[in-house]
Length: 207
Image 1 (cartoon, rainbow, N blue to C red):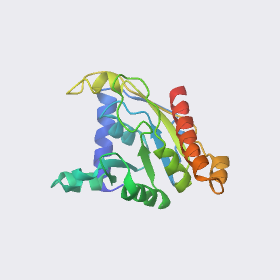
Image 2: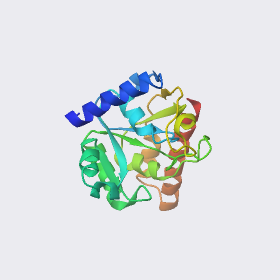
Image 3: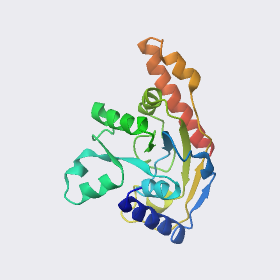
């Protein structure tokens, strides 16, 4: 952690525990070293800092590439390990940046749904996370956030009060699908990406 990240980490922990009485369950499932994809449901703007402050290691986050062009803010989010991606959250450059971080042993937070929920319910997973899983070889740790939609969902301009819970699941490895992906045709490969994405969302839903 850089000093900027560490300060933000502590502030996030203080806010989540002091204001929202956050309960974190089974954080021991997250490996402390090596590449890992943290896959969470997405209900609020509070989700990234909440997860970042709950995890005992530095986490890389995705941020819209245009934010990096804003003075001071661009510098700040770089210090927070932000990864620039385009408006759709991917693209070739974005995927390469994500894979570079994972291949260098980093932890990265991804939201399989792609965007925040509108009604508090889980949305279907997009196949992009499946592609990332196959190409990175990294394990996936599912995470379920409870309470963030009620406190600061899309329907609210400002955050309200509430109580948060962060539940961490056991790592997923997808070894058999990775082996199949090396030799299958393109149609099956696309199906594998979606199968992985769906499995991740199923595990999140169970938490």
